[in-house]
Image 1 (tube, rainbow, N blue to C red):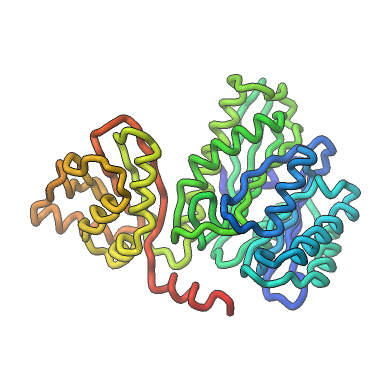
Image 2 (image 1 turned 180 degrees about the vertical axis):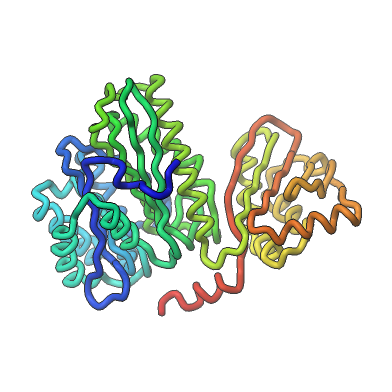
Length: 403
C-alpha cells in the first residue's frame, strides 16, 4: 500500500482541480481517461432523497458501461433542488462531454456540500472550461482534483496498490472525501477508484459492491446517511492482463486487493472525522449471523453516550452495555465478554476489573486508538466497524456549517 503516489500510478488518466468563481478553495474537479475503451461502475447512496448527481449518474449507468470522465463539484450538493437541479446538473454533464468529444452517458457526476441550494450554474459552466484546460497527468494535478471535492475534510486521502496478474503489473488507486454525515449506505462521501486492470463491467460491479459492503459500509462518524454518496470505479485495461470475465483466480486477486485499498480509504475517512480525537475499532465476534453482529456494532458506534464517554476518556462501560441492549438482537447478553484495549472489563456478563486493572484500562483511553472487542460466544460470525468520538469541536463545526 502506497499513500504517497496514488492516482498517477494508473496510466491513461488525466486530472484537474480548480477554483471557480469567488471561492477561497478548489470547487471543481475532473478525471478523464484518454483510453476509449474505459469502463465504469458505481455504488450509490440508499437514501430516499437522491441528489441530482446520483440520479443522472444512475441513469447513465443504464445506458452504457463506457465511462470516460468523472466531474465533481464541492460546496453545493444540488440535492432537493427539484427539476431545475436535474436540468442544471445535465447541463454540466453536457458541457464536459462536448469539450471532451465523448457522449453524455460516458460522464459520471458527483456533488457535495450544502443540501437544498441551487447551483451557481454560470460559475460552474465557466469553471468546466477552465478545469478541462488544466487536465494533466502529474501528481499536482491529481492532488488538485482530490482537493476540489473536499468540504470539511482536513487532509487529502489517497492510496494505491499494485500486484501481478498473468505476469503483468496491475495498479489500483483511490481517493475519497468525507469527514461528516458519515454512515453506511454510504456516507457524505465521494470516492473515485481507477485501475489499469482489464476486467469486464459485470466483474467490476461485483467486486466493487462486495468491497464497499466490507469497507465504506462499515464506518460511521455520526450515524447520518447523505443524499449524495457515490463510489466510482473506472478501468482502462492498459495493464494488458487477460480479461477478467468470470469469478476465477484473477478475479479474486483483484477483489482482494480492491478490498485492501478501500479498507485503507475507509479508515482514512474516520481518521479525518469532524472534530475527531479518538479512532475507535469495534469488533463483534461469535454471533449467530454477521447481520446481528453489525446491528450491535453500529448501535455502539452511533451512540452519542458511547462516543462522548470515549472523548472524556472515562471507562463508563455501562454505556457499552446500554448500546448492546438497545440493538434488540435477542442474543443472550449474560454470556458476553468485553475487552477495551485488551483489558477484560466484562466476563460472562459480569464486571471483571479489579481496581488496579481498572486504572490501567482507563489510562489507556488517553491513546488516540481505542479497540473494543465483544465476544458473544453464540456463533461463528464476526464483523469490524470503525468509528470515532464526539468532541466539542464536532458540535462547533456542524453548528456553523452553513456559514
